[in-house]
Length: 289
Image (cartoon, rainbow, N blue to C red; front, side, top):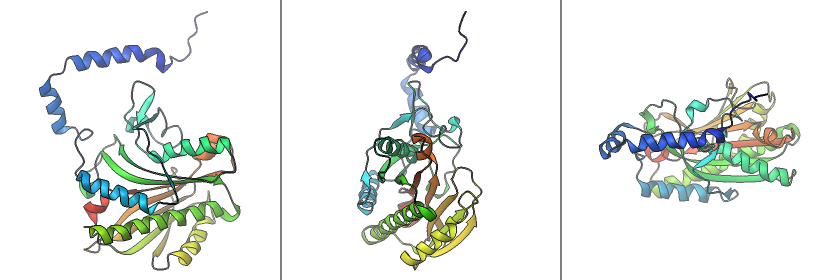
């Protein structure tokens, strides 16, 4: 009897590669230049490369407690959509079973899970600086472009009583971002004032909001704290934003920290916790100078 199961991606790869060769063979130099002029996925970043490298260095120096990984430009196909709520249509997929990295916090979760599979009790702390590419529509205001550079942090390990793992990781991430902003102000003239933390939680982790507030009041006493309800299903009970006011007094939320269930999914161990965060490095010189 003929098997009518799903067609594997590898079985169509030769056909797709042939189609790509055929399409490329029809193109002329003028076609390349025309696409270069209008396609935001291939255009250079608005941030000068030397400026970007300088901020990369500041970011990694601020995150000395975290092992720094240099990631591949691509990740396994489905690295984002399999773990989190999101459409594969927003990601640049390849015909070789991979996708261009659109969120390195998911990729860091893969490495964290691989290490936790070897040692389930390990506390994994990783960071990376990466140029991401996302395919969804994105306005050109406030320095936002199709591809952009982030510093990302990840903590993974065994959960502790009273949300202790998650709370400690959030505080550690915020300390890194505070050091980064202070260094950028000192060395690059970054201007910011009146930092604010926005703690968003829901009934998935019903007590974590007040616990985060208490921890922050003891470690970052000069930071204003707001509490809000978390509406997004992307996060597993907690999302923390960190922002500052710019020269003209406008609030710029530039850090996103979240609790996710990705480590538990990947290791099939419900005791594993995962906290990841990011700051838009290209936004710093564009918004705060």
